[in-house]
Image (cartoon, rainbow, N blue to C red; front, top):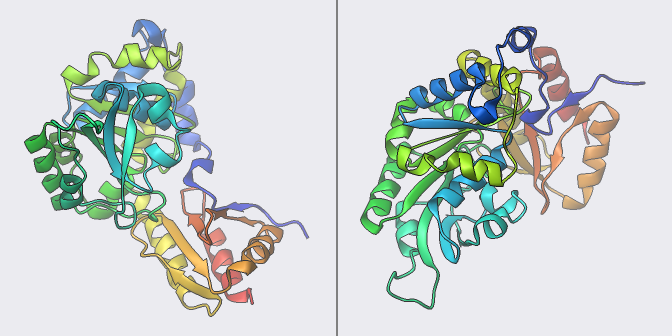
Length: 343
C-alpha cells in the first residue's frame, strides 16, 4: 500500500501557500544588483524596521548570509567563539576558514547555547600573539542540533556585556529566530538593540522557497553588498522570491504556535514509549530523541518510511522530527498512532 508522504525531516520542505504564490506572481520586480528591485527593497526595509536596525540585505541562503556576516566582522587569522554544535561550524562547509580565514573556538554549551561566563573564559589574551585574536561571538537561536532550544534573553544581554568589555562583535544566526520570538513572545526590536548583525531565514518556518536577510548596524553593513558579490550572491529579478519572504514575515509568525504545540505532543508521545531512551526538551518545532537500542535505528526509520513518514538521523543515535505548516492535523494524528504501533 502506498501511503501519502508525511515529511518531518525539516521545516525546509514546505511549499508556498496559495496566498504566498499570489504575492509572488503579483510582485513588482527589477534588477537587484542595481538595487532596483522594489520588492526586495520593501523586504529589506521591513526586516530592518522589524528589528529596529539600520540596514538589511537579501541573500539567497542562510549559510551565505552567515558567512558574509563573519567576513564583515573579522580579518584572516582571527578567531570567533561559538558552541560546538553551531551551524556556522558544523553545517556551512568549512566556510569560516575558507571565506574568512578565521578559526573557531568551540564551547561545550548546553543544547547549543553558551553562557556569558563561557564566552569570557574562551577569549584569548589580546596581547598574547601566539594565539589567534578573538574578535567575534556567534550565537544561534533557536539551536538546530540542540533541538530548537531558545536562549534566555537575559543571558544574551550578559553575553553582550562581555563582548562590549572586550571589544568583540556579536552575530546571531537566526535561522529559526522567528520560532524563538513566537515561542517566548519576545519583541524583535530587543534583538536589534543587542546584536551587531543577525540573520533571519525565510525558507524554514516562514515557508518561502528561498532566502535569508542579513540585518545589522550601518558601519558593518556598508560592505555587505561587496561581500555578497564576492560570494556569488548577486541576483537580478529576485523580487518574486522576496515577495514570498515578505509574505511569510508578515503572515506566518503568529501561526508558528501550532507547529510548537504539535512538536510538544510528539515529544510527549515519544516519552511514553518503552523503546525510547530519551527525548530532549522541546520548546519550539524540533523534536530530538534517542532509542533504547541504538542498533534499531535503521529498523525504526524503515518502519516509518514504509508508512510514508520521513524523519532525520543526525548521527550518534540522534533522531529528529521537525514540524511545519505543511504538517496537518490529520498527518499529526497518524504519526502519533504510528509511534504507538512501533514495537
